[in-house]
Image (cartoon, rainbow, N blue to C red; front, side, top):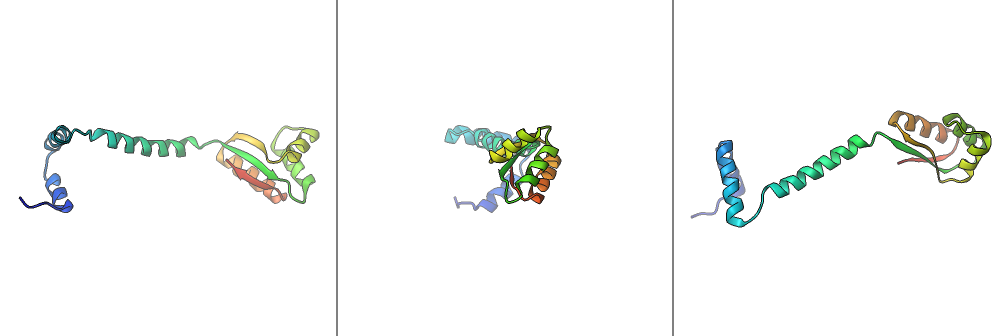
Length: 126
């Protein structure tokens, strides 16, 4: 019997009904003592995990990495973004890297990042 190429095998599978294909998978699993569902489940879980990660990433932490040269401006922006008083906002800026906002949505986090960077700070979103 001549060995079939991958394309020829795929052509053969394309001609099968779902029932025939299911029976083939069961026979293949028995013959080679493998489970076709495991790799599919792993691949599915990986794909689902990646999709969940994208979906879950709806909250961001705005991290002040460094205040830069305009520390007073950065403190003002921190106060605008949070309900912190002057002393508390100064402590956040002095303690960089430090979270300014935690669990913010994408839009809020992006606006906060832009405002802080405009004031001269280095910011990352996590």
